[in-house]
Image 1: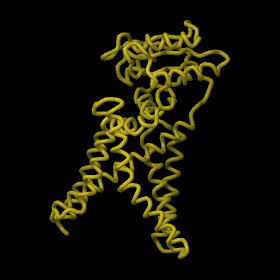
Image 2: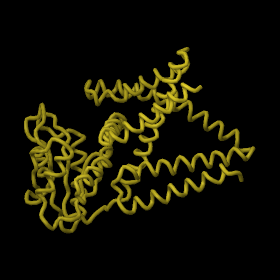
Image 3: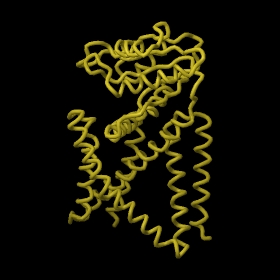
Image 4: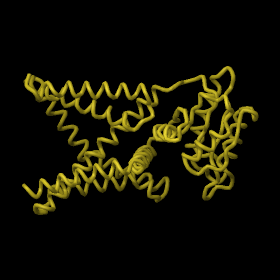
Length: 329
């Protein structure tokens, strides 16, 4: 085995060990997703390289690579555009709802420019854009995979308190997305021999006739939750405020606390809990499939903005390297 063949499995093993240690110490860290992504990428490259050395397996691997290229280059942009149009029609024309449409259109444009005669500098800029797209794609997939991992490793019962994060009302009616969170909280509440305290959190937003906390409180009462097991936090307007304001309403002996949100929002909620030094877990409720792509993209954008210094540094490094290579090409 040559040097490259020996380095890949060692590097993959090191990345996996680092990920495991970090996960054991603190699962609510964004860096865990990156280390998991690096470990999986290196493992995939190692297996691909090993497979290409087996003559009978080479056509199969090349076929799989071709399928991946088609999915990424053709199917993914088309699916994003279709989803974006569906979100536009169902949820409105807000910037968040148009993320999948914009991303799909951007990928199509980038692919078209790759075949256009743009000259040395134009081609260099397109190449830099392609590398940046690959970088952000890697981060997105790493976060997506780790979000699934995180959702499977938390405590399932034994909670002292449950916080339900609000997400907007239809007038004074609890919409399906928020109802999903409340139903998840009700199931967790019903598992305990001693029912935990339920804190419903959310202020009054534009177009809402009551606070989210008030509507959630009424929903829980209708579902048979005792009034003395519910507390309302009706001032919060952001996830940070949901968590910090709700924490102030908890009894001093409430140490095992879980924040209930939608499944796409779980990991960012967990990161926010860590940032606020709150020892809370996060768990999620199901979301309509058509809503997930845009919701996941919004969560990814929020995390990227939260770690904007690292993001800017990475983009500058990638763009600078690309331009330097273009100068000396």
